[in-house]
Image 1 (spheres, one colour):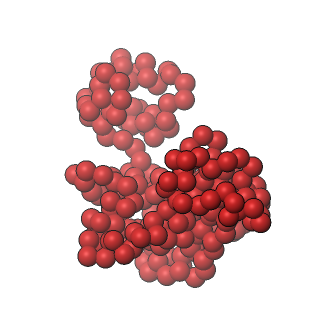
Image 2 (cartoon, rainbow, N blue to C red):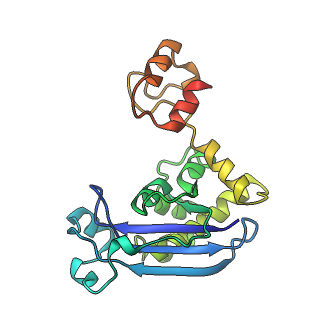
Length: 218
């Protein structure tokens, strides 16, 4: 089983295109040794938004001679991708046929009382003495994968022994199933306490998040 920590920087939130991609290939959940790494910038077909520029500081003119954004591909042998809010990077990568392990979901599960679960906030939480130095290059794709690896190591330690990537994926899948309503008239209520008729109504609505569906059906 092959897993990579994967991160991208993009043109913005509306129809995002990859402008930088990075991944770290890991040997196993037990050691998280990096066996290979990749980093590459790409040329988009649209302008980078000011909001995105303020995050990653990558100028359009720096990408003129880079490969086209549509050239990006994950290695063909990758079976699992790991990331913080991994669905975003999976979507901009073209939704490849891989299983997704989300450190954001795991952070919310193991640190429920934290006031923020962003990757940077988690690095401050788990490694306060070194966090400022670690985060100086935050929102560089490669630096973000390296920080995600540090966070992943902490989360695996909290979870207990993880046999393999499939077991970690299953933990992530369970962590992604919400326990509390995050919107609507029952916002803040434990899903177990939401009235049955509201659950039934919500399940009939289009485009309901599949993890919320799983919670509503329990």
